[in-house]
Length: 284
Ligand SMILES: [Zn+2]
Figure 1: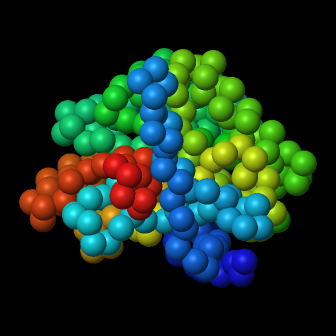
Figure 2: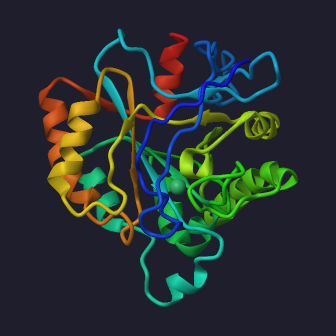
């Protein structure tokens, strides 16, 4: 499979020095075949839909849902914290954003939160509260928020043998924090991936989830500009990437208060990533 290198985003990696950017680095060259959840027997809870790994044993990459099956959009929020940022949190830096979560609840907006394991360790009560709220689904954004490729906007890089363990360590950290059912979806730190990263991800069973709309909320100071960028970018089936980290994405909550009513006025319905992946197969 040919991996197309594409520059999708100009969005800051929250863990790096200010000014660093985060991009999506590639995409499979064929539309992925969805693997629907097996039809559940009455006893077994249905499993979330995923995309079956490709022929070369690479995890598939999901960027957006169907364009022609209704005006749905998935807002996603990366809860970033890097493994070496503990001292900054101790010094008072806030990597969480409870007000943003409260606004999503108040406006009744379903959303998918890509949480790092380190974030869940720092904010276990919030992780648990988000993880147990049916309005949300929690997915995996690595444990360490270190890069899965050789070069990713200044993030420290994991060695190849550490890729899969980092994903698994995140699931363990989420479970320990009280997230009961973290989804089999993985967002690469910095959005950076290559064949090697997809190969390491495949055995975990997770589908890689990127996006087609960059909010530009990282280090933004103008909520209206963020809202405009989202509103300009959203199409049916879109996945929007935003952040749930106050210190590095301080205007996201304010932007949401514009984005949500405006998209609803345009007839959009907010859904979770799992619903878009399910809709790809017509399963949900
Ligand atoms: Zn991130």
